[in-house]
Length: 355
Ligand code: DOR
Ligand code: ZN
Image (cartoon, rainbow, N blue to C red; front, side):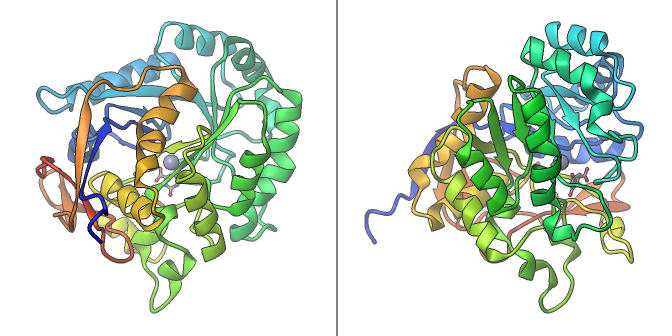
């Protein structure tokens, strides 16, 4: 096939959902995001979580101190909503640029979410304020009801929590983070408000639940929300590759030390920062939609958040990426495993030497 593109130039992408952690892990992973992405929405689920503007300012300083020399990567900070969030602090933080958005984790839904929101009614005051000032609400959309099967938790969240919430706050800007189901994609397709968007991770475009469970349990394919059946992966691919402005890139790169994943009770999270653009390009290529990758990766996100796209560009080329199996953490006693997809990745970033 002569006319298959071999090379792509894209406006520099942004990552609208990223976990950087702190300490040695931050030092190990930050450079991988900073070499590729212009900006990233930084998740606040540290221990303790980033629940006010003072904590966000302090965390941002730690990120800036760990930044590779000469990098222009911009961390965009978020506030972790709790039953005690102060709407005045939230508004002040949004107005002065400390916060770009706030994150709703249902209590107990995922890693470090024990401080999360017990009942959505408990954050009515912050949500009223966010709606009034145009501050986006980023949602981890899974119910925590033990009676609900883990593969149904996203769909149940939409029915039980998201639809009532959006009825009560119709002007609130909402991002459904890391969607994993056809149900979520359909809910977005049906929306006509222009105030609803979704991020999609590289792993949810490439893997289904068989990749986690068939032939042995693969902890490095495990994240939350967990990958679903193939029908859902296909629906996510259709959404991401559609070019529709409601869908944009959010890697959910979430590093955990190797031994905490290869464990009797392994942590949820996939570290994909080194491979993210290779993985997205592979998925878009498989869908015959490379011409829509730039909208998904570099244009739709800034448009939703009200930013300009990045001015500079990155280059991708057809070919297997050279990726390390693991990245060392701190003095090397710990490592984090790099996501490389379930098969071969067929695109690579040009000039992105390992860091
Ligand atoms: O797999 C996940 N890992 N999902 C999340 O929502 C949190 C993340 C983490 O922080 O490790
Ligand atoms: Zn996340």
